[in-house]
Image (cartoon, rainbow, N blue to C red):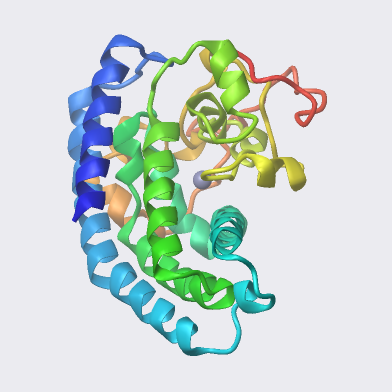
Amino acid sequence: MLTPLILAGLFALFFLLERFLPLRKATRSLLARLVVNLAIAALTFIAAAGLVQPTARWALRWSAQQPFGLIHLAAFPGWMEFVLSFLLMDLAFYYWHLANHRVPFLWRFHNVHHIDPDLDVSTAFRFHFGEIAFSCAFTVVQASLIGPSIWAFAVYQLAFQAEVLFHHSNLRLPIGFERLLSKVIVTPRMHGIHHSEVRRENNSNFGTVFTFWDRLHRTLGLNIPQSEIIVGIPAYSLPNDNRIGPALLMPFGKQRDYWRRPDGAVVERTQAPSDPNRARLAE
Ligand SMILES: [Zn+2]
């Protein structure tokens, strides 16, 4: 019961801070976006509470009785088991997010999250219920292969959700502080790049809690100034695309050529970053 309260508090905090310290300029009406995002999020919550939570509990109970689970391969002390499960669960989610971008069927659903034309804390809950349903299968694999304790799983879930709220928020942090923070955890500027209309940038920064995984897999992209980012997916950038009905039905219809604008132009950045792994986080 504590977790939803903490998350609601964080949501309110980030929502308030975004009003005073915005990172990117909004391109659409906040109210119109809020209505869409909260409607999609309502279905996200129903799917999460009705499907993901019960499945996760079942998978955790099941894996606790099995002789396998990566974490049980060696007899680690309790604290180390906790740290290892935390890291492994985050690495697993990195692969799941990557799959949501690389597997065309999964991308149909994850795209509904990405077509939000602005990015703020309300985007953090805006996931198609289909994506949430598929993530059930992922949670079963994640929990049973890694075998975390119920406690480690719950702490990771809380950190995960809090991080998702934080890195989607449109909060301007002092750049020096954010550069430091982004050495360890995913920050708003980093995730802003992941929501860019430029395909190459959309295909970077898949991490949720830690930035190590993007560094390790060379998918880190840091040197894109936020003022140059257009948020969204080019083919779905018309005002009519971001309405409740069209957004929810989108995965089931014929897909557009995602990276072309409605006028046919491909969105590219003329000055491509030289080596995203070596670059510093831009303002
Ligand atoms: Zn994504």
